[in-house]
Image (cartoon, rainbow, N blue to C red; front, side, top):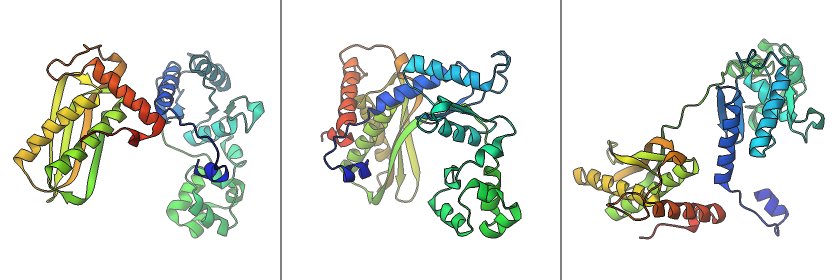
Amino acid sequence: MATALRLCPGATVVGVPRRACSEKSRAIVSVLERFTPVVEPASIDEMYLDLTGTEELYRNESLEATARRIRQAVLDETEIAVSIGGGTTRLVAKLAAKRAKPHRSPAAEGVVVVPPGKEAEFLATFDLADIPGVGPRFQDRLRVYGLVTVRDALGHDEAALKNWLGERAAVWLYRRIRGIDPTPVEARERAKSISRDETFAKDLDDDRDLTRELLRLADRAASDLRKHGWAARTITVRIRDRDFRNRSKSLTLDDPVVADRVIAQVARALFAQLRERRRVPARLLGVALSNLKPADEVDQLSLFDEGGEETNRDRALSRAIDQVRERFGYGAVGRGA
């Protein structure tokens, strides 16, 4: 984006609605999990699937046929056209997905599957720079020995690569360019906690300064919580004192919460208890939210505050703040003194 704005200073920049992207990502994962229980989201827009053991379920149809059905199901239910790569390893599947992108290979129509035994032949069609993990500095080292494409490197045995690159880098590259990747696909566990912390450049001792940092961290953690679609029952405040002693205090609420006001209120009370017990300069301050459950499973609440509990008004206000920040940046709305 920075490059685009330098080239076109008068361009209009439309912000990406991060929450909408996250919701779409979760919707895609939900569709994928109907085809196999082993789905690993690597990022917001990249997921790995392990279809091992599902052959009978799909009546031994080809992997390409299954991939096309998956692609169509995602398109029908999320309106997102995905590219799918298939192979015997994560590396091969990732590169196949890259090749499957319609603008790279229109004939592939979004799906490329590399048959077992054809991994090395497939990888030989790439540059070394296309291999995940071969960054600019490593490319420069390889270029010294005339290694630019995968085919260039395939022409040398492991001993020659070790002589040039050293044991570790040589073994890694020798295996990668042949499609050897033992990394398994593992379904990720539900997030256990969301946290924000800050290590100060200079130890803080004034309660006003520490409280200001605490509330900023609580707001950040609450924003992350909502962005990922969670609600939390347990709130924890952590302090690392000047002498590196770590102290923490937690509170588990009766019901999960998502709103800034309640999370900040609890965090402030926990912080006060920690400071009362030991009042020394602090090196680090943190707020963690745990005991998570999906926010859409949280019950509706009353409109008015009854004894400090979270209300629908709190949630509506937090959502409004999120929308402003999505449009104008996080600093557009801040907590008042």
